[in-house]
Image (tube, rainbow, N blue to C red; front, side):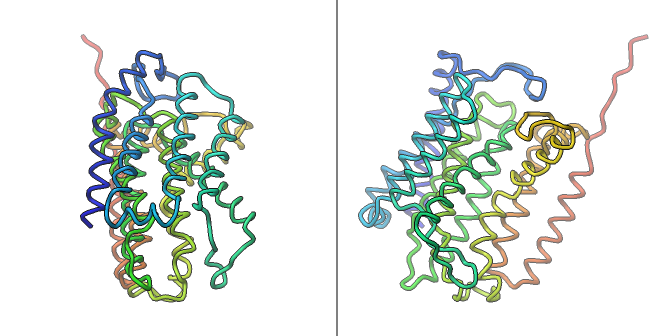
Length: 369
């Protein structure tokens, strides 16, 4: 665990220190988010925060390559270098989009390229836990790997609408996935907690922790597309690295056999459940209104929380709570008796619903007499 803490703290400290420098760069080159009708900030805010995150992740990779146990990952496979290469490409793509808007086809091509590079370096789906272990032809698995990257990057980008929201949700998701992958790795034969998935998750936690103090409301710097795409890619890399590594016939603590088979599929989905739900609702909402599904609007989940009276910070914290409920609740089934997990989820669900429905009263100022 000591090496994981070193990786986490390195990513956090470097990201935290690099963020003010990136903010100065954003102001100098004009990478600033103007105030639009659907936005909730009232003054222009610089972006490009993803560059600071990339620097923090790169520092964690450099450190990891020099550590006794994590260093073996770099000797055995170039996977982490592939993740760093993909992360660099997608962050630079997002940075260019933050400075001058790119068309959707260019951004999609960049996401496919980043996912393809990771697959080339060995970060790819090996099998799927369907009907036991299903190994598909390599071209199919590479295509699925790229598809996961594209979906994950756009999902994180989709929820980046409030100060600190995307970074906090990804922090919760990465923490839940780190806990799951770390504990599951102990059941490997031989046990080995030092995996690509656990390393990426630890570094991702650190990156988010280092950036959040600058990004929580009121934000001094937005992560921009550079940050949202980077976080989505790292989440995808962690889940891809772990999916296919778990033997569905093994017993995961007290989980049932059926749960053990489904968890490798359910956990990645649960981790991104909130942005997936937001995407689904947006597509339905815009299609019913006769709009294009990708046309921006002001109807996201965070907008609805603001509209019913929640403050900016309260809305963000509530979405943190819902993310924690889904991600941690799903992971708990792997290591706790089913009834304990179900009771815990039920209690947290009641609390989340009660807090969501209870908005602060809106006070209307009376005109002066």
